[in-house]
Length: 246
Image (cartoon, rainbow, N blue to C red):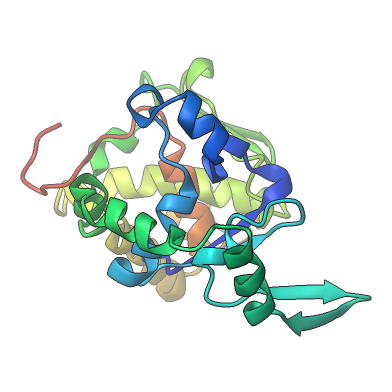
């Protein structure tokens, strides 16, 4: 979808995803740990791919050295403490982390290839599991065919009304249906743009199944929620190359 900003809250992130301190790194070498901490990815994401990161932290100062700006909240007022944070980081012997992380990530060809590519969605894979019916009984869950392949949307906080989830469910079926007359493989941006164009031109009922039009069944979600639902579909087929078959 072209994201250029990642927002994280320290309270909801796994510690080993964020960083690994020197003591743990000395005990458990990189060859034994499959997770590359985000601290070692943050600079290359910005410098090589234009993706900024915003972190809300209160207990970890490991990001000071790689941060461009450090804002401190004090009595509900925001203060730029970037210079002070950098000075403290250097005094604590953390200087050089920024250069280290950039060097590590510049060699990460797999990450660069992934971020530099346009994922292609195989539209036929959006058909409900087993050809079964689709049900939306609550805002955070779509039974998309078989019960075992339900789509969990409860983490999508911007969904606020049941009609949005109904539209998402039917939009996914709509995309699969029109794929029979269009290209069977399409990038996520174009896929979502196609749905948005149909909604703009024909109203919310553009994605409604036959016989369900004009009953006030829908409310419109953001394009991001549609993309998020598609990404959560466990039978989704994706490829980097549009000509790929799997």
